[in-house]
Image 1: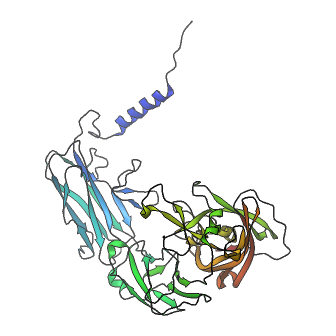
Image 2 (image 1 turned 90 degrees about the vertical axis):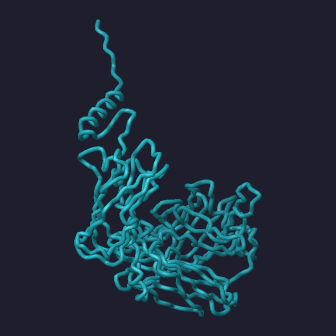
Image 3 (image 1 turned 135 degrees about the horizontal axis):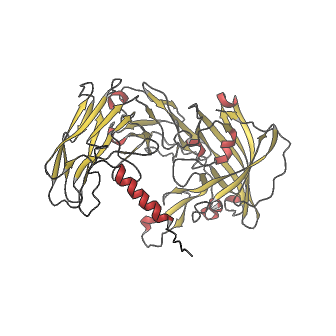
Length: 494
């Protein structure tokens, strides 16, 4: 009787993989022994979204590219890596930079032509900055020319992808701007300053920006507006709004708005309206802390759960949704600040404070969006990335007003009035004003219910203002709401 031994399938795969690796590489591609032949090459890595991976961030799953189509006017960083086991002495390498059009004035290279490697610094970076808009079909070619140590090979150790040259193809330029924050709350004191930024994701040309009027104003109080120098290295410009009058009537709502407009070759995207607000002031006991009933930072997957009275296949019905819910972080001196955590230290500088009366909706990290107020139900063809539709993440959304100023179980709720931006996958963008109000109450032990009305205003989408009814809960187990005998909104195609 014959006995057959079974070979481990994992070992088979490993052997085959090694054979393929050895047979697919070019001559002198890899040295599998203990020695590594020192070599110098461009190490430009690109993520799946076509955005360059900037040193010192690493990703072993990406392969160095020999060319890149650049549509941005911000400084492009091209890393050059030296592979060696040890580097006892400093090494320098020279490179050249040539434009296909011969126009050397349209870009600047830093350093000019020499790279340095020493100690543990085995990567240096070539910074390519753009001084003006380029011509069609222009490119910039970088080439590693010489290295001070003759033992160092220029290029990777293979003949297929040496990466001793790198070509930057200059594509169609896209320049746009956006507000990273859509709203600021002020105290209303003369001389009070709000510092806000305008972000330029793809960079800008200072010479162009100096000549443009990028804002439209709707002012409810007097202020001055200045800005810092246009520094291209930051890809943003900081503006300073200074209040020129006291607006101290606590019974009056004050607001000024600054809108980004399309100007020259720059397009307004994302958050295009910035609100500067002094809200109506009411006396509230921070220890009531109603906001704390609707978030749990110990659970990264914490959600609040809601129902929206909305059209479903031609019939009005309650439609369920959920959203990631977070507190509004404030400074210690904020009038609504309540201590959330001292981080277990006696140092007060690391203490974390939350607004006792506000909550918002957002994602914990990344570029996606949550479903604030079930807004994704309101639209079809919507873009759900935060860059295009930041309005799906409403970081300061609801404000609570406890009954008698100190109730821990009930009170009124306000949808914080603001503009949100929603875009379609077809790049149509809409600025929508939201507002609304309602009540909240603890309906059973630990279960809070918010009942409110949400108003959305946009003339193009809705022909004015549309309204829907909402119920929201701090637990996924809640009473099924009874049907309403009222009309409801319908989905809008963006």
